[in-house]
Image 1: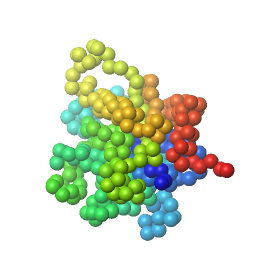
Image 2: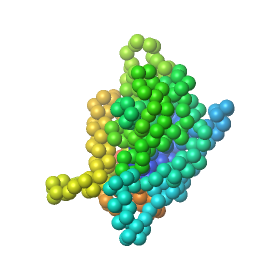
Image 3: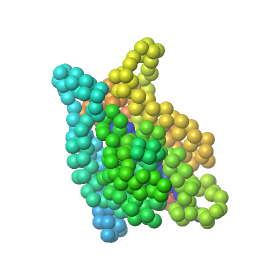
Image 4: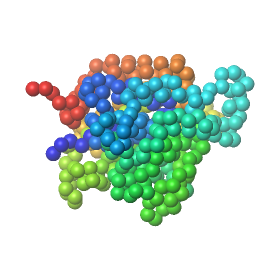
Length: 348
């Protein structure tokens, strides 16, 4: 039986340059587009945008023509469009006003993200994707996790919604952007949705993607319905967007109030969720069938998910090269994973 391969991409705002840079190296190693190497691509927040952008066809009526966007195109979106989504305020007064505004309303409006996402995603729908995808958000209207999945939309036409709406939903990070409303029917739930960033509970969607495959393996053509799954042939590559490694001091944890925590709690929650998911995946998966690639961000100055200048993106790309792409033990693990999963086949 052929192996089943899952790619999982974390959330992290403009730190999406990290997984895109790693994916570029993987394409170099495999010699084929990412969407051809994986059976299921899962993403949360910026990971959901990357999953969508990787799988949008050039021509939905003829998917043999391949993807609309290359990884270079996707990286360029992060490098050139970030300031449209998260417009910075450089002057001291502007920064002060921004902090005051952020205390009572989302830090950014929707004009920028709407413009960029429309340019990138156009009118593509979930069923147009070149491979199966799963994109995560949280629905406040039903108080329920909401997973946009190809496995559901292909049997329920009402769930075949625009990738634009899906990506707006998964990217609606509390404190940064307003919640996003859409219609998405599921039996037993209200179809009207009020969505926020899936990073509040599943920033690293590896375990969610594994559960999706395990529950619906027959849909994915893996084994027979009702049979146990041979997890020896299941592989998961999980790619993070970086984690700030600096601690919160005892004084800050004890004495700081709402404004301090409002600007940090999202990253702290994602950091904890990512580590727990990584632990669970290592416990669940066959040794060698799961690989986690991410970076440690040492400098708090470059940790914000909404920092859009070139100094920050250059720093993140440089760290990605130092800690992943130019790190011999890590690259050995990656090459072994690609070979064991069959993504790269040794020539005889």
